[in-house]
Length: 194
Figure (cartoon, rainbow, N blue to C red):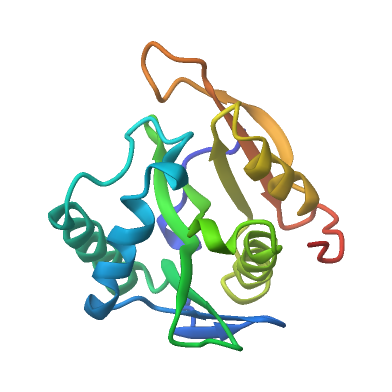
């Protein structure tokens, strides 16, 4: 396991908009709050989230405020994700953020997509792009991801990316520990497979 995130490790900023083969990844904004609530308030998208779905629009507003602050302070963060075919329709949210793994800050890869976007390889494509930017543009030494053990679809995404199991973390009291995945800059990264 790596030591705590070195604040000096963050030396540059991500562009507020990036693209992959099929996706547009852009910094979210206040106009995206309703869609954030639709996606994160849906019980289906929170099957493995111990916190459950967002209970109200105020939760979505608070999360968006935190995301925008993260972008302002860190120069990177969560994206609003859409397809190039329908650029105004947000499919999900995801990206890179500093997240505490208990008491250790890490660069964390995370994502949540609307149910209608499932099964199309969007999570793999977004995550592949995020890792490329993390290592080539931001020059991070490592990226982590946490996943609940029953979330087989997300585990499959992380493993397709070449991320390796790196232990567990007891982040949900009274429940099975979350799995921790790791990708270091020097790990081999397979080509994108959707």
